[in-house]
Length: 207
Image (cartoon, rainbow, N blue to C red; front, side, top):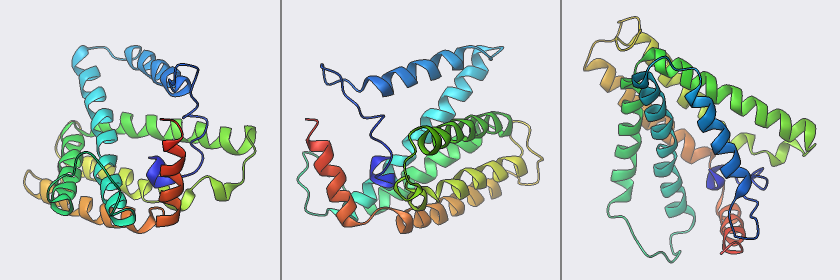
């Protein structure tokens, strides 16, 4: 995410004396506690955790391609083979796994993401009183069609409470096509080379 937004992440990356991002760890602990509260069965909890975990993994392929485009000469210990092919495939697979968890799971997942984002946006603008141009709205604009599209496809599908308008095979094709479209939108809205270099410079300071 820092590579995609490049703004508004300072609070999450604060380190304590042991070089631990304590704010992010605390937030993750709170989220973990919340996840244990409202679920009547372990199976549902597994579905929710699987979806939100895969959702975070879906950001990786986009970040990889942005890095390859903006910093092609950056030194790295590992270079993934055929990234322009494997990254889109990984993004498609992530979205398929999210879709296959079913509509009921996804409506909870995206509602939770929307609530969390709204709280953070309000905190950023009203409490921290930072300018809107530094929030990175343009860089994260692709998240709305990503989440919204998968939610609509889940509603149209026949898995986990969907309407059943998309049968198996056609739903897989629809999710795959939408994934490619979303990845193209993400690449167009991602930060430019200069901003990426600035983010990497800040990250190196925490080593």
